[in-house]
Length: 513
Picture 1 (tube, rainbow, N blue to C red):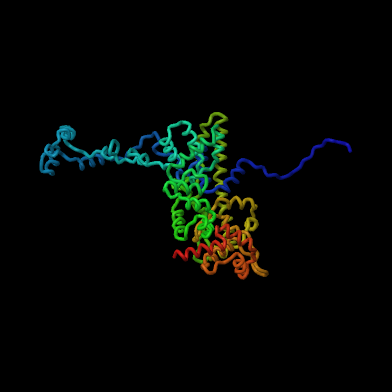
Picture 2: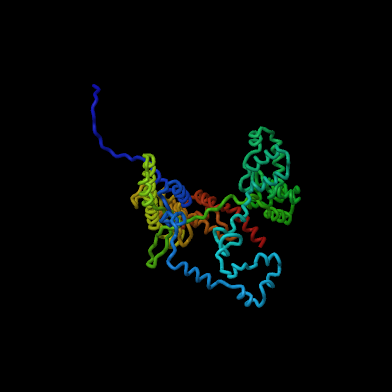
């Protein structure tokens, strides 16, 4: 077959991932806080962008032109001073005595003495602005400077380390140990790894760790729960042999195996009850008193409300939508003054980015509203009657209904939430796997089945604790075809113990009552 060269024209379509398209895709999956941070960064970077609540973009204080006063302002000011001006004779007549008798202190009399040229006392605006004792907001005391900063757990421990030892080597090891303490107060790194990193012996690190474990809060820098409780008991002088045996067998405490605990600790029922009560008074997470950071409030992106006719009203949360505008006036003025090609290119790029950002934000809002409307249509039973009526739903069903790609729906529902009369729910909450029903019945949402299992267990009595098999039978009688291992998996996801442990707990509660 001979080889030959030739020219061909072909027409085709391809998707090019431009930076603007990547930006629009990224905005879809941003949460409220991430979107606000991104828009704030763009406002700082792009001079053509401005917030919608400040459409002028300029402040009168920044202008250099003097502010003209209306006609007659001088007359009004003179009237103001004449009306409020008070002579010395009038003051003395009102007081019934001389001003010299009022200001008897010599130093005060000198400072308050009226000069002949100042016999009239007009009310001065300096009393209300400027100087010390001013009521002007701009010149007033900085109240924020008087606020105390929150002390972190690491700062609290380092302050105690400086007092506990003056050896520079021990302070260095102590700082590395403190850095390895997590927000719950536990040592999250092995001492051997810290010793290898610092080039010292593990015995030296263990010695400094024992020093750090004497710091406040009690139980800090422990490697596990047993050590944390042991440190607190030692400080209370309550770590006797019986308590040592109890702390060494915490799994039996969790299972409420009282018979085994009495045998291991060598105590009777009364002593064991006292020991368990003392154990419950200890703090298993000593670092949580300092907090791990600022808690972020879950802000709904969409609100769903019931209308008077029984339909559902869906509206975007305006507070969760950053509003930006493109300042065309400023762009025209800057464009006229642009001289070099670099300046013109920069201004054109800023305008293109600003226009694209505003369109992307609008498109994001419309897409969120469209996806939410379909979720509400699919899960209307939940909004009307509760979680028991939650239906199985997947991303593909919503994507096909609104004519979008499944990946787009996935991005829209990520990190978003819906505010309802039943609370605030993440959008992903409404997508639940399907559990088949009995022959001839409808499928059930996994979240609804999980909720039903929790309701059954909460309604148990001490004499009638349901096993997993019994729960399976009850669900099958209700038209839900489910396996025993699935019930066990759902129960464990809800952090509900087994039927044996629940029976033991309920008996202890009934005995204590």
